[in-house]
Image (cartoon, rainbow, N blue to C red; front, side, top):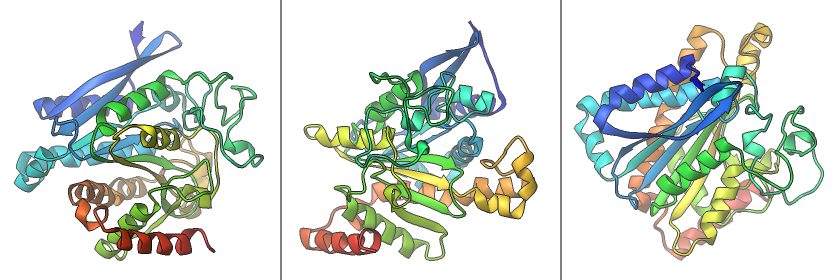
Length: 340
């Protein structure tokens, strides 16, 4: 079966070649579609100690949102350059691990579809059902692959891409004593949102105090930032979210490490507001079209990505606190996000 090469995959392969022995890379799985084969790459940098603090950066689960993959690739390029001269950064990586899976859905990117080649929405493809019934079609359904937000058939069978995502998270992050994942998307709203669990439930998730303290630390470090930190359920709930599923599975593990998944939802409506005609372009409503705006987006999230790396290396600033501090953080988080 022939390999299908496309622009953004070529960029990733070029980066992998440039990293050389400074990174470990592998093909987690291959997706076959229309007589073409698409590799699913994972690249890790830093400590090979499984228990080392780790951050995972993921993108491209929705093929229409190519800008997410480009944002992660831009950060990988920055890291490549830092490794060449920044001794402090090199030392950080001796004590931690960074994991990258920037193209989760290559067929979707090539086809310019939200779903994968089987018509399945990968962010609706876990077996986890939302707790509250009803709601919009967008929450996920099992009616037909011809309709958007399709979860896949019943009984549940994960797609190859979903299995690969699970394998990377389980082998690279959940083995760590402390790990964070960030999955990059675009399309919802007029501001950039940094979401944490739950998306399948409106209940506060068990690590709400830690999420709140991480938010407070980011607010103090970057007081002029533009993100809305919040549980995803403040906006809507969905069926089949793979990140909620991975979080809940990790909680069930005996002696499992600390793990929080986040979603960076880049608000593309502000791009449309400034350039309404782009709705008729190939990028549609999900990717910035004008060159200067695209460059701005590619550099816009570097501080956030670097902050997450620093945070797993300094857990005493937000994670390792006594019960009184944690209880106070829980109270403040509930007042901020759940009692309005």
